[in-house]
Length: 254
Image (cartoon, rainbow, N blue to C red):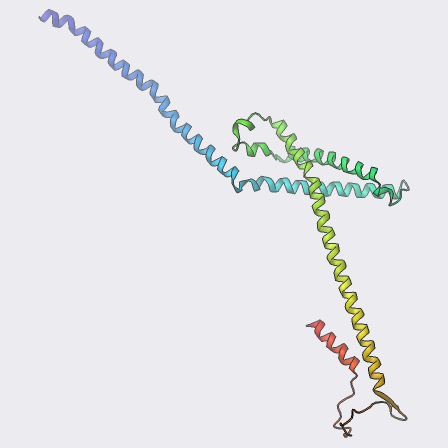
């Protein structure tokens, strides 16, 4: 019996070693998985937060610079065309009607679009504007494949395409300002005409109420029933025209 126990002892020791090695191997293989799980969970949380931010109101920080760049490019192109039109009128002998011809207007429209795209690409390249890089958290699988060069080109195309709406919007604002200015001028002209007409009518009525007294000059005819008062009691003679003008002046100042 002792021999059997002595012979079986190495086998029991081997089984224990194998069991411990199996447990150690299982822990060794499970450790990276356990460590990778929090990292993957944290990355998923960050991606979800980025998607919520991109889907919410966080798009304005990238849209506002694009709109500002489009307006700046539109103003630069407008200045270039102003100088070009001036050179055509003074150097080439063009007429103002030639600048409004359909062929020239179409040429300006197409050339403005090309210039806007070129300037938009330059701005996107040198300022670091990357529209798709910012929108990548919203659609990572779709936008990760976009190379940086294409991101710059497409952002520049978008800036150049936005110059036309910016030009139209600025034109609408300018027309509205001119319309308001012209309406204000018309209102002032109408008020001036009404004032002149009122002053003329009052002057005519005052002339009918005055009589030329020899040695005294113009004197106002007293109204019936007023009687004759002393000169000390009579108020200073002020015509209705002067009163009307003073009233208009006081209302204008107030």
